[in-house]
Length: 141
Figure (cartoon, rainbow, N blue to C red):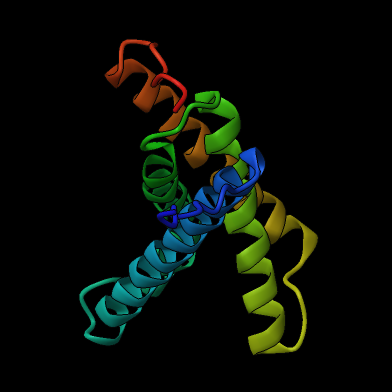
């Protein structure tokens, strides 16, 4: 009797969680790269320090946008919840990395604005992805 391959079936929510965590990691890396680029421009004297202080929120927005679009590919779930979840994961990762690197979490006002930027970028990814696909979701596999 021939042996048949047994496929490992993941739970339905496991694939979604993996996709969300990958999107959050991509969002975090994108935000860090943007902030590193701004730091390089400040150190070269091409950008004023006062403008560099205001670059954290746009970095969060663009990071969540990039991570949200990556997480939404081949997603059979709602666009807005997936995008917002990626933004929330990015914010939690930023909070964790900041606490580990600096020994304390940022102030409530600073992180509140960054949280709004992360969630806004994730929601923007959901809206743009829904517009791109015509509001149709991919069929369930």
